[in-house]
Length: 70
Image (cartoon, rainbow, N blue to C red):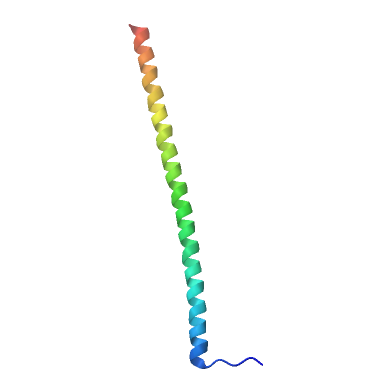
């Protein structure tokens, strides 16, 4: 037969279980935040590279137009 826990032992057991659940939830949220941050940074860098490529192409177009005018 299982031994019944005293009030203090039951309280400490529930506290430990709640602490584990809280820690798991915090870790899950941190992982989600990291994933979202990485995704946002990747999109930002891709947009910056995309904008830089267009500026570079526009600059080449002007050079060609200038060469044709001369």
